Length: 565
Image (cartoon, rainbow, N blue to C red; front, side, top):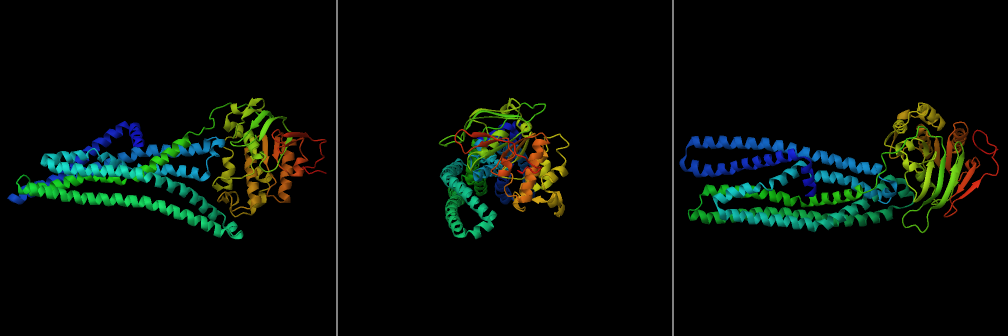
């Protein structure tokens, strides 16, 4: 209920309007009960038609007014939830896009997806019908008050059933918590299995993974269904208890009322009306009891979202230099991931001059991609500084700094959209018209032939992170995106992977041209001997924990393609 109170606190005026609307709805709800009582006690007894007409017109007016208030209340309840739901969805997605990579990497991808979905769970729990059900709870006392006026004995019976159902609902909510947690955990695992089977159709068959995956899926599905059935069973029990309680309460009301009627203390019409009042009083409690699991799931989702919200975000502020010449300096850099026996880097220092080519080599797992992330500011060193033109990059505005990078990652990911969309999205912060010439970057990336021969050209859709493209074309599109930014500092991570001879030649030529003719500073993470031959210095990350730095013995003669001659 803390979440509901938060929503109401943010909308005090609407909250007051909801309270007033709920009061009038329940007050007008008395009309049908009073109509039955008056109809049986007055009209049936005396047969005056004008009395019947007056009572009928009155109750119809009350029903229409109640309908109008319900429509208005539903609209108010929707409004009170919309802003908060929108804030939650934007906030969660904002953390996903602005949270520091180091912390996001520690959360499994499937769990991150479940956290995002949790915002929808909260929205479903606090939709207008559920909010109005909660607002009806205190106004059940209106029916109890009238019932007490008619017969205090019948009101005590009704209160007893209301209290019993309310307590059962609270207890049920606590009992179902563990099963709901299990359902969520298993759902995360099963989603991962499904995603693997769905996206790796060829791999599953070629390596005969079917038996293994079917076994895992069978175990996961059985566990999921087991705990899901517990939740469903709990829901059925609550609904059964509610229905049985309503029936038992009617029996108790009629039995007790009959005794009073025989004694002449209660009219038959009053007894029937009293039973309707008792049902109206019990309905909000019954609805609340049945909503227990929904609010429990929402509470769990909010708890995960709150933990997710504690992740440290990247800075929005910082310095934007007037210009960047391309120099980069590492001063005593040290970095390690949690639970590592030794740091990836220790006491790493190097000055990288503008227009130079630095090659970083190392086996898988030695920290090439991590070093890329450190340069781009996605990660921060545990110790030391990375300086760009003498300024610590932690002082720079992140969005400005990344516009200074022509970055080709090893693990390529695209936005869902077309090739043009991905290239245009890379230029949102740049202003240099030359770097924004889309035809030029297509040509330099060796993508012209593909674009010309494709049916949709630059509007070719990129589906499932480029699964509809060959690995070589994915690499070329990523290269074109990097060139579209046009940053002074070029960072290529394994640029010739997945490329044929022509594609490799394009990379060699491009690197040589960027450094020697374009005035860019180039850092390449690679094992490619042709690129290594172009470097003035080489950093060997295989040396742990302090990387070794080699200076090229002699500058190799190179043609425009950057290949040794």
